[in-house]
Length: 463
Image (cartoon, rainbow, N blue to C red; front, side):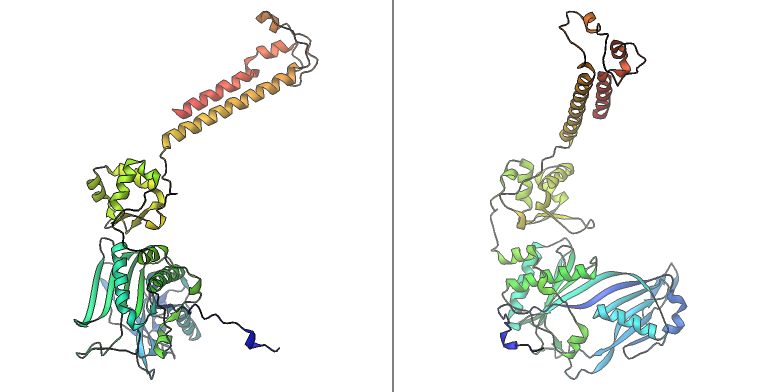
């Protein structure tokens, strides 16, 4: 088949995006059907072209007094930053053979975990992983040198917006004129995370440190305890993409031998949209006055006071109550009324911070109405009306079904009502009964008896 490549149109208007998974800390819980304690003799001293297993100097504790050293898994990787790609063994995981868990803390996790399991299996050691939990996942990208200062300013701006009680910022510099690392810990962007940007430093452990100008700086987000690896990818890429886009710059590919060994490209990252909250905050001018407040909020005193209090700065519940002089129950009701306009950050310990999600503020926003008690009464009233209506309909059906065959006249007295004797048709009543009036006089066949019993039920329900 001949293909005419001259007709293929390539779009160069949007540069390709490069995002990677770097380090991952994960716990592989091994199935009880393959206890690691029975495999220690086989695992100890295990080597193949990629992995080696040996004794570690780390100490684990089991119960109160029993301590033991786990096995350490090392992996053969190119030495960091060297162009010739010289290989060396690097720490990758610990095997806790007592608790039947493998703790991974290393690079290139997705394929490498399966590679390790396959390597063991090919050497007669078969284990079955039941499930995996993640302590943190690092998502990163490289950016140009000339954007380093702008990136640090963007991270500081994010710190003000997504601050939580235990946040801290740490900077490192080779000299007063050159900062090479900028780390912000414990932000809360859809979950806890750390964000940093840093340059690669040559001879890091020696006195004459120097930035390597051949390796571009890296922007990295470390996601704390993500639900899964897929969730971590989407969260991480969305945040980094918002930062890079706000600076009108691009990501750079990782092409060196050590980078290809240590970093996993995130496929499909172009389909992940920017984090809306991060993008909105970084792309707008810092406001010093409140926006146009939705009319529903203006009409509710507590909602308006809370909106004004936490729009520019998120605060804990006790401080909000103190400043607004309201009770915790009033605060909870007001938070509920504002619904998804409220952004809750942090965790129960040391405590949540409550702020306004500025991406959702517009004049079309409507607060909730608290009608818990009235809605219950209204529902019961509706049920009662429905029962009454059904009873009326049933009464009419019975009336027309059984009384239409008779010839009616105007009744002058109650006695005349029961003077109808000759019924031509009656399927509802017992045929042995002599007349219709006998049936009507028995209260257990009287339609209103049904309505009365239902009314009693409704009354009990309302109480």
